[in-house]
Image (cartoon, rainbow, N blue to C red):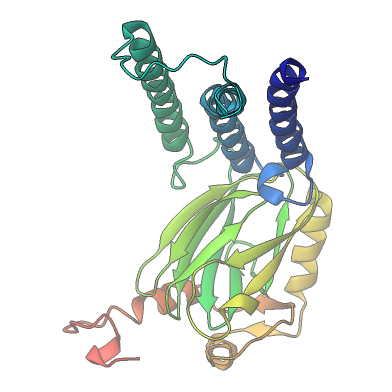
Length: 296
């Protein structure tokens, strides 16, 4: 019976690890493991590679843990006890050499992948859709200066076309992240950052603010709709005749710190609105980063 358990237990542990990993990777409800974009696909592949590489160490450790617990249990009088054992150079090379090789491989792959996914780096030579993102308290405003469109808490983009985001904030620092598409990036007032993404699957995905910035941050989500290019063109045309105008007056009403869950489409009247929002924190002669040196 004991011999049977010695064989069975390590096998069950190994199968449990493999089955658990399979369930995790097959769970389509986890966006980062079910990517819908070019960047998120590369990030998922790096995660899976890292996990599989780690199993080279993790699986033997757990198997040996069970083996030693069974073999050297108190009731096993046949196990040889060698308290004066000093060293084994072969084992020393093994348990130092394998981790060193694994860490070196993981370091090289992670470095190359991370730099290839630089958020400022264009994904292709194709002209991208330009989207300007403004993080407000506690809502998201998206400006499409080339299409004359603006949206609140809703990000429509065409499938299989790169999207270039320019991001800022008119609120405490926020974090822009669409797990299904990849690459989280921060937004800060008085500054602009950039992000390049491309959706490869049609669908509706949730975007988040993952940085705590006040009482409404957990409600600061938005809907990303990846649609066929023809539907995206129709959405732009509908915005062009919308009675909702996004000008400075409308923007001032959105500056109020309140939770807004509505999804609204506007016709963008002021195409320089994003620059105005960014530059208002760059007052000349100010040392605080706010207009006229006043705290906001």
